[in-house]
Length: 400
Image (cartoon, rainbow, N blue to C red; front, side, top):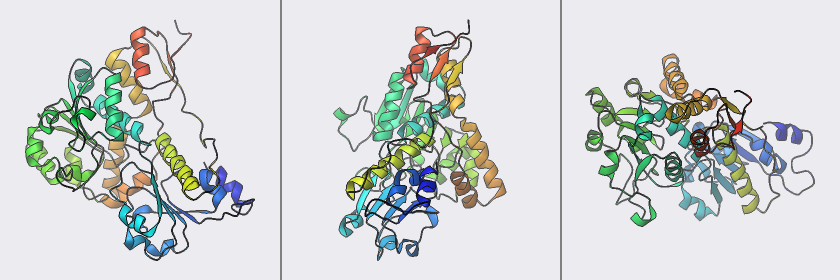
């Protein structure tokens, strides 16, 4: 992934053009050197600790959700372009950027499939929730943006019934639109709203004491959006009462110094990595690189990928339904490993240090969608399920 940096270290950045940008990128955004190295040198920084003095000579700033980009950070800097490798925008003061004439881009949908597969992994890992949904249970989705739509699309492909609540959209723009109460009555509830305090439908503490009590004790609650969408102290009190729900949290109030007691009480907890697949992060980098070229009228990024495709998966025997789905999801991503790593990190380090260390050193997780899958016995129902996961056309193995 450093091929671009090595190549352009050997000759002046922007050789053959009049371009020589100074680019500063969050240390957790991959392949910036590959996609933007032809425009100038790339420096790295810890996004959560970024300070104004680091931007004194920066033209292009690329961040993730841990960096608040506003006047306090940018005033007096020569920054001409800000990009965030995320779908969320709550950390960006877009009004200030517009006022300063600073070009801006984000990466909507780049990590959507990564989050979809995180949600499926959570469902597959908790009890018989996967079987319940495939046997006619109902999933609830809060938020119908890029990620909420992707989750609904995958549920529909798998034959899982669902309801969606998003008060910011007209009901006729949402399939199976429902009230929040109706969504909270579902067997699985997955949260994907934009974090906002705007009236009349703020998502900040959308699930407080009353809403959490509406959830059935055996329901599964998954939050892979933003931590403050759930009132974390209220959730901890609810779980202390032993009234459920089963809970999977990827995002937390107070990140990176998360509530250790809440982590001990949830079913699974991870370090804000639901959207951290390598495929999703590379797509975000490419999207931002294309935006830099377009908005600043510069040469386009390379068209090749810096990494090879994900290795194929092979399925032996004749598993079907939930068994096959669980096998494929877990073959690509073991959510329980991330739960164990977060618990270990918080035992060995302070909450903030351990949380961010996991994100910085996160392994290269590949997505299931787009993977080649071979089946020993490709019956129509199994073939259809593999296709519903977004995998490449199924090939028949030589296994009898």
